[in-house]
Length: 376
Image (cartoon, rainbow, N blue to C red; front, side):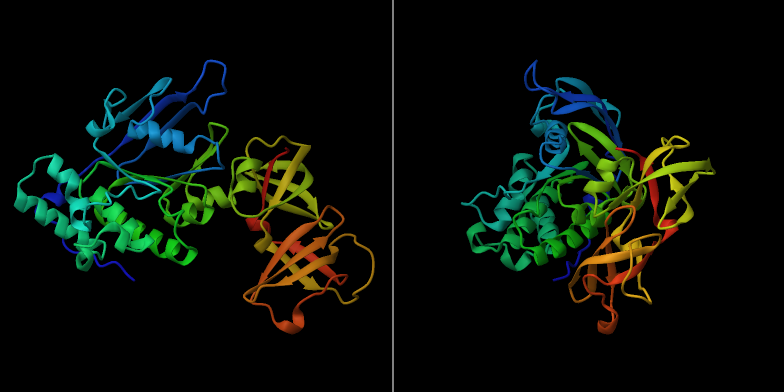
């Protein structure tokens, strides 16, 4: 289903800013424990959709809870539009959160759930009805207004939770892994709707997930976290193609890492020997000249072609297919080469061109998509 957005009530057109600044933010649960969040600095721009991404225990949820006011920082400050909000309780912060568990009131109807926060603000009844009507229409829930939460599907319940947050017109909208309880197809649909709605309303949004696909498809920028610290803050394209570290490269998508020596550093590029040829590829600024480094090649950037002679030794650009798995739209190969095994993905393969295990192949890669990182 595609969400159709109605025109908001006049009051909804009031501009929001929503610039957040985290400075030295730290959370340490006991004096001897390793910090869950370790002295992070981060600026979230007005109207931005920013995702905190990382493995379990990296500190992303703790960071979100400190922003929301559910956790008290051990050190550091949180400011919103230039004002320190660190001492404000959650209900006093101009924010709204969409939870993983939906957190709907089971004894209230859909409309009552959505209107709950507005009633606490003691807004006029007519204004509440207008705001709720807009929110329900925007989330394709108007026909379900009188149903109880237990009469709704998981996707419908998540829409109610989003409508309840949206109707409060927060300066900042917080998402705590809101789609993890939905099936794969519905997750794709819901993240499209969330992004469309966020762009329409221009609300600063912070989204926590461990799902790389969600982060890549939703975000203006991604904050990759590891062990309580920020590894990289960048747009999705740069996080994927120009990761700041081997951790980021390995966590985002799939990657081949080949040990190389970086020579002739100049103009943001270096020369490396790979698959029997000297190649000029882009290089991370921390890579040292004539030092050991890691060549990052994404599987879809590996070029695989059948060798005229399907027997022989692994050397130069010749490799041996170790495994070949056909997935329909693509075929995935594991290939032995003289500088290490590589994974290759070939899209839309012709059946007669699919290689089999033990076949010899010619191996290369798109040099413009490769990236040299400091060694592990």
